[in-house]
Length: 607
Ligand code: ASP
Image (cartoon, rainbow, N blue to C red; front, side, top):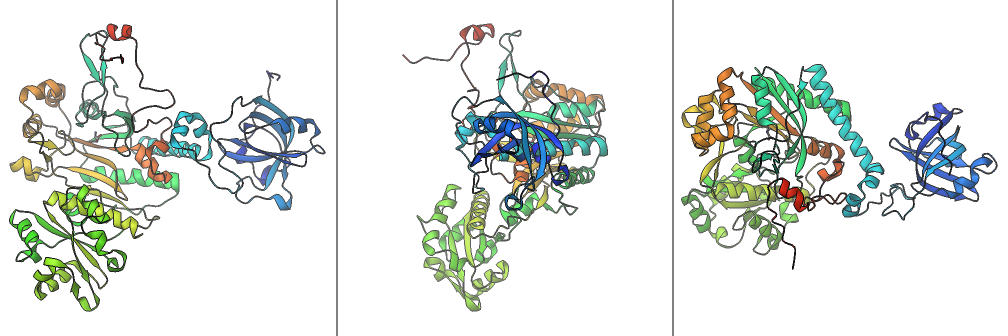
């Protein structure tokens, strides 16, 4: 193989060629997507990050390249120079953006060959147009090949476009300034487990990787930065539930002197800008809002998917006098009874599914519920059920039940009874499950909404203390200062089709309020000083009122890409076990390194 020092420069990307280029002489670089030999005429699909174009090497028209074209194989790296031609009528390909033209390969240079059998086909354009998708483990092991393929390379580009739109809006339209904050730092207040890094030059002391830039962005407000943003990497050492990564990316923002209304307004404009630029979608404004209390009451969840109905109804009052023991006991002990109306549920769901051992029964059990009671609404508003509940339903109760739930004939009413949190969580899960199962969720709907007025705290049963629901720097609603423990927070989340994509709050900016909140979460004055003393101190040097928000970039891009996992929109993600299958991190280190760090090895080789 010759090594040309003066190779011609690329004139176009493959995917950009169109009929308008007919007759142009072009130079392209890329990978062979696939090769077809039609009786000596070789067709090569050439791929680069923009797409695919067809090359033709024909012994009659391009004799110089026909031998080499026959040698080319999938994923060979080549340079081609040739002329753009209109394809013959019978080989036009409307599925391809470049499908009207082809390039005659007048010069062809193979720059690199594939030495080994490919672990999977990079080309996602097999003859049926079906996408051949390899197992995720294999894709992560050979991520560079995976990213070369159409789907992942589109996702990478989309991610880039989303982040670019964020930067453009924040910098050019809203006066934000990007500031980097430390990666080697102290514990931040998000409440997850920290990743720790030993300090070699301060033996025995440790940095924590930031769970978010929270404290630094607040300090930047004290500094007068006024409008800060950062595309920030955050680290949380959590067990990797379904769709989490130990390191993830946030669009992190903080603003001074803005009310909650002004912050939400600015953020809606940001989100609209992103959707318009990236997807050409005009989102209606203002975004709908729900208070936390309303969301919990109607959906049993603080990030409701509002694309479909089936809202929960509190029917406790209907059963205030009932002979049905389970319900009576629930109400006596301060619990609630809520109904989940399933339209057409009578036909779709059998008694077996609901009764012990059934799939719906098992589902709610997973979330702590004891089981499900149910009634079926029949023609003419007749109500029909089984067992003890049947005997205890008087005509009056039936009428009231219909009135409260608005249930039409055909509806199945499923009841959760017990502790409010458990009823909410189990019926929420049931609602989402049935929404999918009964095909009630319109896939093309896009519902963005704000959830506001979260409670400040949540009771942590294990630790027997109040825990900040968001983080302890969130400002309480000034109307609720008399009873901080019950206070609403000035906090807000942005929810997209049932997924929380962003969350933030107005912050506390007065030392006394901050100290009260620390006290409420059971942090002693000494602990507060030790952990967050620098922030408390800053509050005494002229802190402006401020607030902010952070968006999960990975989730946002995942939703925009229509993917189900954030791993599909992160260039080099880790597995559920926190491993990189590509680099095989994490890995052991040498004892010498541990010694330098004054860290004792806990690694015990097997005997
Ligand atoms: N730092 C917060 C978080 O990561 C977001 C915020 O309050 O701005 O959840």
